[in-house]
Length: 254
Image (cartoon, rainbow, N blue to C red; front, side):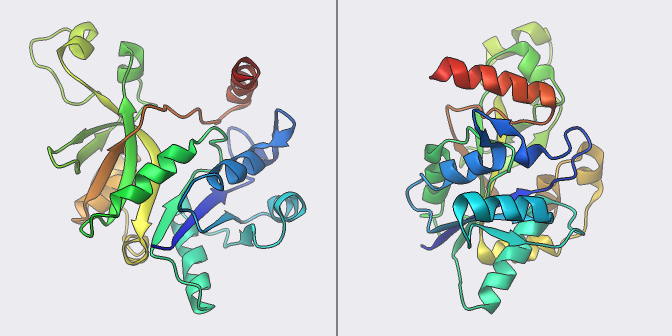
């Protein structure tokens, strides 16, 4: 299988403008993501997909030509941005079997996570794959900022929600983690190229609009999403406060 990793990166963020170029431990966030993605076995190429010349110039200077592609500023999501990259590459005769969408604000993404996603496609029935990690605290379980997922016995996602699912009737919420395992979604996706093109043509539906979760559009349209497990709960950066916490994490990790 030939595997492409695409790292969508926008400069215009409401909560943290210019986030991809913010410095973390002496390197930009987006450079760190690109470098960690390239450490994963099985990745044949990695490209940052951006709509901003500043990010494009930065990547060309730090990682060289071919590390970044300018894309439209009209995309609704990172998935759509990935779709544009793949379409343009295919027109140039460069085709990939699997495409991994790695968020550009996750500088601590583990290569092993990407390798686990790639392994999912050893099963020819897998169209889309993503990751989940065990929930470890009640606060984490109840926070709407942490997306939870429930899976069928075969590892396919049944539903994603900002609410704690499954609901445990007759049990106080403080005891839910004692009664069974809960899974938190880790927002890295992998697609067969054909499935990526198809989901990019879907229109948002009622479930997606309600929860503001793009993957519910795919489930509602009948696509299956395989969920692989990881022990790593990634540290994403959404705000300047998150960046400060990431700096502390990096210092303690050394």
